[in-house]
Image 1 (tube, rainbow, N blue to C red):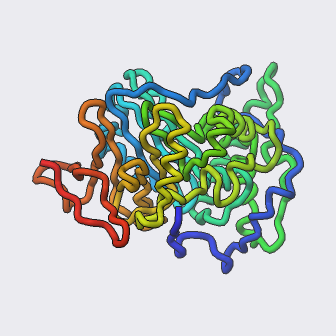
Image 2 (image 1 turned 180 degrees about the horizontal axis):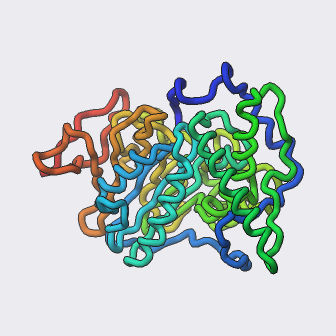
Length: 390
């Protein structure tokens, strides 16, 4: 994401930005297991990178620690009922990444998404989650955009996790639980003592092979192809396609599970990384490299469009490059710009449309309305007015 609410994030006045070098201090990455019973570990199978085109496909942008806005987005698409249970039937849903940072309900959202995944499968649907740059950053120990409330949430997690481990250690015949804090320093240079335990808890939970990263993030995809749509948090270049989309997904999964060292794979780091790229997401269409996008899509069989998050679109979900670049991050989290939730819907019969909670497009007695067309940008200027679909 491009912007943040500075008042809610930890700044150099209360928590110095020392964390970018954190990852170099860790030696032991042997943490594993939640205090809840774990499934028996089995050899990892390749993640599924390509899916056939479903009858209905919904894409949801960056959530950034805002549980209520996350639920609003799912309700907008008719995916959950008043009790937050899955009611989306056979719909396929893609969440584009960036659950972490900027908000204080990160763990609640991770559990919410996990619950919906299980409920969706029972109804013939599916929810597929992707890694964003903020997932990668946190696994590496870069906490520049964490909020105080989020640290408190991980403090509570660590308390109950520790109790669970103590209970398991009393059970004869069970393996003695590993200490999730093993190898993490008790204090950090320039970090106020009041934050030390919270920082340790977050590192323990999210580092490679950490209980939360393994449980909730390891099976996220980094690149996804559904029918003729390519999903990625930042964007793809030809070199990424040449390297192999399946290979990227499997390697990121292995890194998060703790088998590839401390640092993320190179294609996840830097301005041209798959989770950081902005070449196709600038709010001004003239700044989008459409010829490059055309070339990249041509290297992926059957691909017609690339759907991305990462860069806030203040005008809402929109398309550039003749709708071959669809940008779905509306900054809905209160930690970003508190944008009105919108989701992208792709129907096999009727094509693409935007479902919006913007009252400008609502009809009486309807919660969600649609915006007609996605080509909302013109080359030299800003957005042009969208029309309400009748």
